Image (cartoon, rainbow, N blue to C red; front, top):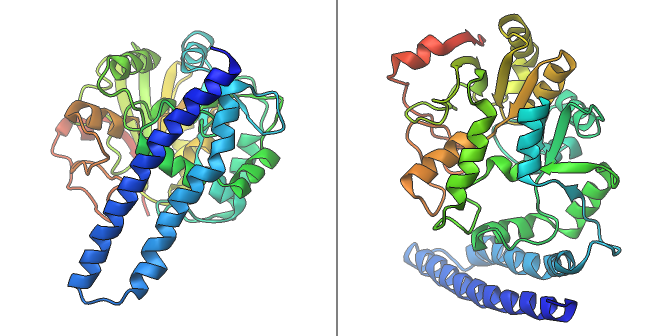
Length: 353
């Protein structure tokens, strides 16, 4: 396929997406409008709350178009495209070279900028400095992952594309370009978002991605460092192929306030042969960095367990998981206590206030 045919192909795809987006917007507009009328609210709410959100979706598509088309053709242009490795290479580096992984998404970048994007970790000046240190580190044993948002989005669902386009404004791209090294090869933070964002749920691809991810902890002695409501592997078999599984329990929100205690616990209870799996929000990247500095291997796994629960349920959209804390669906809901005794037996350290 030559360059002209590529351009025509992507434009045809965008036409389809644009029409679908128009339909979605019209449906959303009418639903909210009818709801407001039923509640006898004025159209002020529509003008002040709903319309700006819809405009953001439309603007995101238009502003992002040049990047998605350019990525189809070539990266040799004036637009900024970080180099991002394949998932296969990342997993190979973890398994065969003993490398670690720190992941940066919108929340981590926001804290570096000095703002809050999510409620699970309030802005902290020291955390901001540490995250910047990790992002710009050059330790060969620590892979830095960023979200693959910069160009072609064809592998994602329509909803995910809309979210990415709304976030990846020209201003956001400029900030990233300042922070990132054009000569560095990064890894994909979405490696742990292997199911819900992807548009291939009806194929064997999710199962294949899962199978490759499970190789990371196969026959390994795992220490999970997680928030108190994260509950990695509870009620499922995600980590059943690990040789052993222990837990260090951090606060469910604002975990960085206990960071020194968490790191001390890792160094006290971990051995050089253990594999640390980290799920403590933005603190995970900092902890991965510090553990690597102490010759441990650590992988920031983020929402991998939630992805697995959605995969098992065959969910098409993010839904509430009663046994899990989910900051993206119901951030104010605290799940019921775990009833599985094996979970409590796996805990080797838990924070105290």
